[in-house]
Image (cartoon, rainbow, N blue to C red; front, side, top):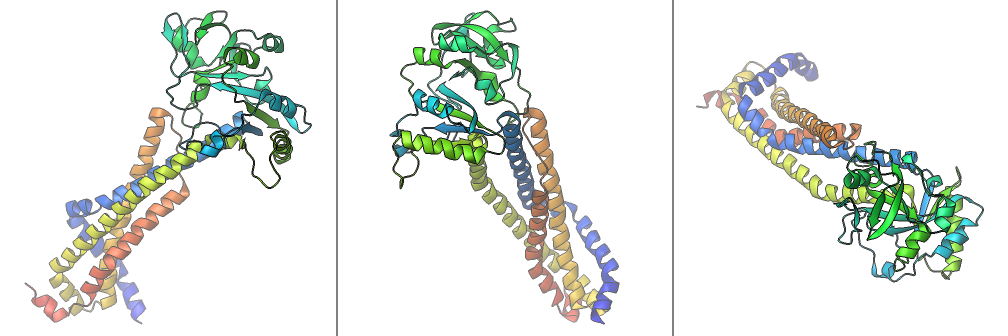
Length: 424
C-alpha cells in the first residue's frame, strides 16, 4: 500500500526535484565542479589509453606480423626502465648467432640488425648531414638485404640495397622521409650523397611519408630511420658489438619458432638448464612496451586526481544538500502535513543529489571525450570511445550522489512536521 502511494507521488516529486535544482543554477553548477573534473578525467584517459592499446595491435598486425626480436636486454625499443646490472653484464648476441638462427627450419625469414642511435631521446645522437643541413635525432640501422621480408619497409622511391651491396660493404643508404626532407629540403635525394658520422653514403632509396597511423599518431620511426648494409655498419662501427636478431615466423608458428630459436641460443650461450635465459625475447607488440609503461604511470598519477576530484565534489554536494534541507524546512513540514511520507521526502532529496551528480557526470564524460577527440585532431593522437569509461564515469557520479545525498535526505525525512512548519 505504501509503495503504491510513493509511486503515485513520483511524477510530482520529480518535478519538485528538477525545479529545486533549476532554482539554484549557479550553486548547483559550482557544486558539480569536482564531479565534472573527475568524470572528465576518467573519460579522457579511458579514450586515449584505449585508443593507444588498439593502435598498438593495429600497427603490429599491419607492419610486423609474426615478428620476434632476440636481444641482449629483456626489451627492445623505447622504455621507461633502465637495463638491470645483470642485463648489462650479459654477452652480446653476435653475427654468428644470427647466422646460426638463419639456418633453422622454423623461421620464415631472419635478419641481423645493429643500431646506432636510440629509439627515444638520447645524448649520443649520430650526426647526419647533407648540403650543410643536419638531421634531427636520426636512427641508423645496419641490416641484411632481406630485412624488408621481416617486416614492412615502405620504400617510396628508389630501392632497398642488394645482397651484392651488402657483401661488398657498399656505402649506400635508404632514408626515412623525415630525414630526406630535413637534409635535402624538397630536392630529390636519389643518387645524392649524405654524410653519416663524417662518412659519405649514396642515397639509393627513400621511405614513404608517414601515414599518420602509427602508435602515437605518426610513424615517427619511419620518418627518422636510415638503413645501411649490415656489413657496412660493422666496418664503420666496430665498437658496436651488440646484434639484434629479427625473426619472422611462419603463420601460426610463432611459439614454435620462439622455442626453437631460444633453445639454439641457450646452447650457444651455454645457459645451464636450471637458469633463465640471458637474452630477451620480444614479440613485435612488446616493442611498444613504452605504451604500457606510460599507461601505468598515467594511471598512478591521474586516477588519484580523479578520485580526489570526485571526493571533493561529493563533499560539496553533501554540504549543499544540508544547506538545502535547512532552507526548505518549512516546505518539508508542509509536504509532511499534507500527507507526504518520510520515504517520499527521503526519495526527493536523494533524487536531487543523484540528479545533480549524474548531470555532472554526463557533462564531465562529454567534456572528456570532446578533449580526447580534439587532441586527436590536433596531433593525430589515437582516441576511441570505450564503453567501460562511459559506464565507469556514470557509475562513479551516481555513487557519489548516493553517498553524498543519503545523510541530508535522512535528515530531511525525520523532521517533525509541526516543528518544521514553525521554523523561522
